[in-house]
Image 1 (cartoon, rainbow, N blue to C red):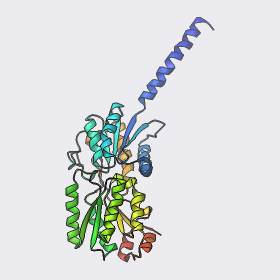
Image 2 (cartoon, one colour; image 1 turned 45 degrees about the vertical axis):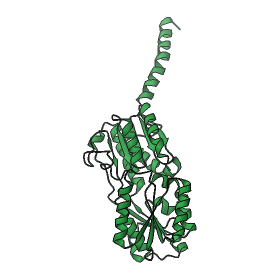
Image 3 (cartoon, rainbow, N blue to C red; image 1 turned 90 degrees about the vertical axis):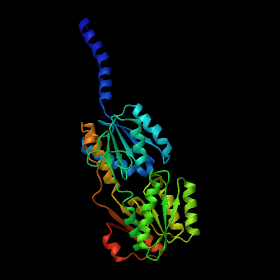
Image 4 (spheres, one colour; image 1 turned 135 degrees about the horizontal axis):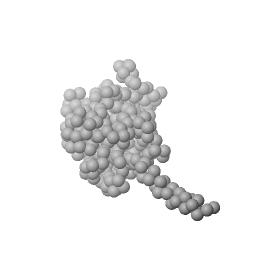
Length: 327
């Protein structure tokens, strides 16, 4: 080997690691800020990844994702968001309600943010308007508050003899708890039923809420959309079954786990759209120019096996409207 060949070889050996580092640095990174936990959120994450793949991004190939999970501890969200900002991620995806999105927005005014699961992003101060979000935030809004009257109406059809209905909510997950309670109370008055508000923000408080429900001889249960309730889905459905309480839930997961019924948008579809938005932003789109999306269809799921165990006959009108019947 002559001197010139040796210089070229050594030069290549020095340049290769620099090139590799440059390639690694060029790979975009998404920070996924989840209010819930990875297990119950797995179908949503898969749908999110599908949306990304439709824009040409595949985790581990040309994209990295940093996951941060609050595990239902909403007070942990600001620190988790700050950590993602400190890692200089290219996009933050805020999953699981307004608190994760607000934590992300408080942590950065420059990194693009795509939220999923915020009922009213304008009222929550996340965007200027749905059509023109402005700033660095956009996402998907699932009509959390707006669907409560419809769920209550369906519940009164499923259990017409119920005169007292309990509403289970987590006061820690929304900044607009009183507004939510007022809306549900008004819907109950319209249907001519009494409403009992039950609040739970921990596993023990869920147990206590069901103990109260049984003590008061509540006829049916309405469960609000909340990441912590998603984490504790099996516990809630099991308690409803044990105490023979008919309940309607915000997402199909609950009905598939043994809940009587659910009504709401398809959350996997929402997370797929969130992934598409994140991919578009990585390609150069600005959140300010991407309108906040809202669902155009909702799915009613009925679990006939659970209805039979509860001794309920599902009205034909409900079965005719059901998008899915679990037998």
